[in-house]
Image 1 (cartoon, rainbow, N blue to C red):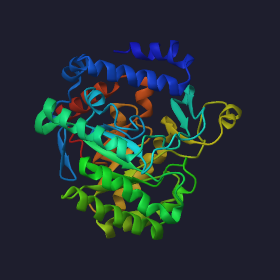
Image 2: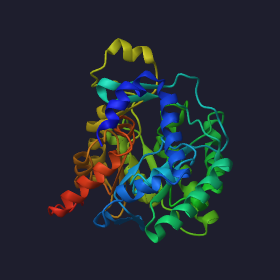
Image 3: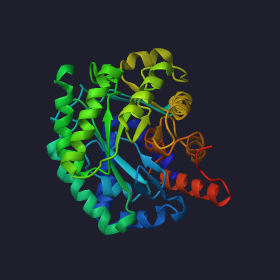
Image 4: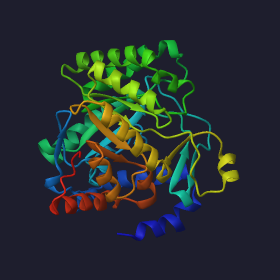
Length: 363
């Protein structure tokens, strides 16, 4: 099971990070297409004791895959077979876009971290929608009523001006909400110019209200709605977002996105500076992400869900987030470093802790 880190060191570290990502993702998809991932499905299935209901949705495990790995809904069944309780796809924009200029993905191996400035590269909501619909059908056929959950993360198209952002988000909402188990409004990526300005309460209020109403209208049901925030907000701004979320009766908040901070890092500061702008994810984000979770849990009503993400690497990390007030936890960067059996190890750690009497619930 631990052979992957050696493969990563000997093979993938010698490849361009974005090419390595596509190579790994394509391999997972091929395994699923050939039926090989059915072995993973049996081997990696979360223990039934890990099931929980959040936002009215049944999750096979509290641990899922964060947005960013599958940007276009191209490999949801393959990823679900690895044992993720949910797979969040995206970020998806109203119009297709190629993203920022390459290179735009960089590893900081000493820190088990990644810097990215991908820029929401995706095929656009209209192209992605049928993929998510097909994935839902495939998962229902394989898992039945207890299938892994599909979250859909939407963002602003780069060329759209901020004053037109609401309508742009509504384009994605109309295409995708009907296929989503839950919907996430991403206003916190540092890689789309001006996007984080939408985190201000006065601009965020009409955006979330419009997306929530439109999602429920097109889907003919309530689609749980969450907003994803940055770790770089100060605690006062986080409290303001919590107040707004409560006012609008959102279903939850995802905390946090990547950070523009560059400390603390073990990597050489000059080399990091040479990489340029982008969002930092991975182990260095752990402390701040946990701190944001604690602020939110104190400010939000118990009924509102928090999905904690950022610096999550081990089963112990997931347990810490759950006990600190998270309802669900996501990972991503550690997946790149640890490989396909990483999630199995986390689910086993959660099941073991639960068998030992730990509730894995908020304290």
